Length: 121
Image (cartoon, rainbow, N blue to C red; front, side):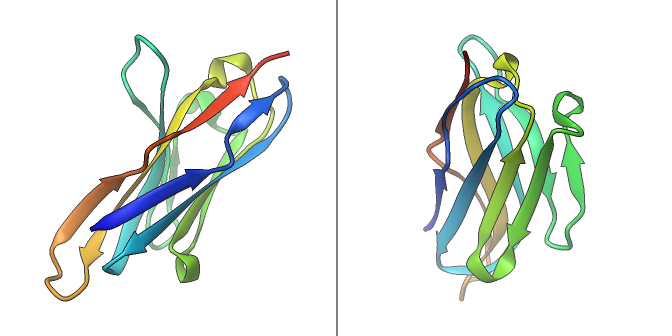
């Protein structure tokens, strides 16, 4: 199995910053695209940002200029730096990763359990 563990969520005031981390572990041969998604009650889970193995990034329009996704391939970890946070950013943030498992080399896609981000005064 491939496991993803998120960390870094919490309560922050509007205009503040948080950095989310997601570490992948297990029988991983190669990690390809990794990303962050978020979900609030009554809404569909939506894409926040993705990053390819080569470093190409994609962002939702609502977070462009405020959020930055990055990765450390040596640590099998993806990060989401969130600046200028707004109340509408409040959500559970989920990490996603795709890649190849070791030995069998079959493709996988895994989700983390999520981490709560609350932006409030």
